[in-house]
Image 1: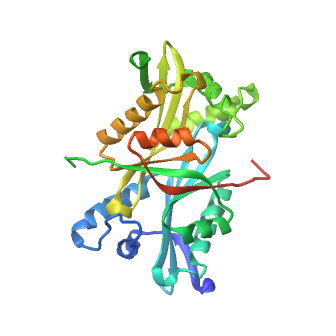
Image 2: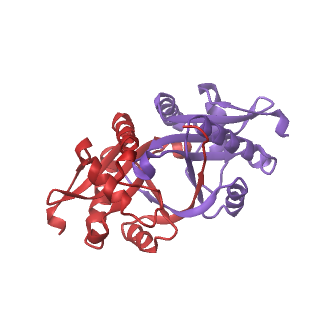
Length: 158
Length: 158
């Protein structure tokens, strides 16, 4: 399995596969959908990621199919003498491809990119319900040192 | 106390006060220091934050003194139909100013900025050791839904 996996930057052509990947996820509860009505929102998000100097979007591809994805964001902060950190977001592996080393390869790719760019701190959050994912990150060398907080804001407009 | 607090964008003139604020923090263990040898690293981090279209750095000021700070990063991801989220990082309140509503005012400022910009999700992580901070964020309406993972990368060079 591992040998046939390629990790590369996402292109706009990957968008339908990426949307499907997120829509199939049941734990996240992010309201993702392949309904064409939502397509413009995904397209505009893709453009924002593409145009951001601090974001990269990766896909894991097996036999031409996008089976996994992860996004990384570079954040420079003053703490730690001006640490440049990498935040990994929106990690997803297709359900039937889990436990096959796909996710590891994807995260290792992120870590390689971090090292190439001189990043000294890599961080991510994982839903508290995803015990398997927590063990997965710990096996890769991450330490569960923090609690992750979220707040949804509702908007009457937009 | 609350009435005399001003929250505004940080300027380069705030840098010495900001460094002191991080250097005085004992829990984070980020190795911050007021030693002038580290100043160029902080200066270059400040420049990176200033130049980033997706980052804002705020300070809380009481009687001309910088007593608190927070940084926000805007991240657009595909999940959630292209959610634009705000990540709050590097939140710090001077030890003698805690419990006086300073931190709340700062976070509420971040949330106001998020609403102005149509952000629907605000997220942050807090060191697992900071039980007080966790209650503080929960009082403000955040939910502790995630686990936060970190990995330090060592570099022989740079």
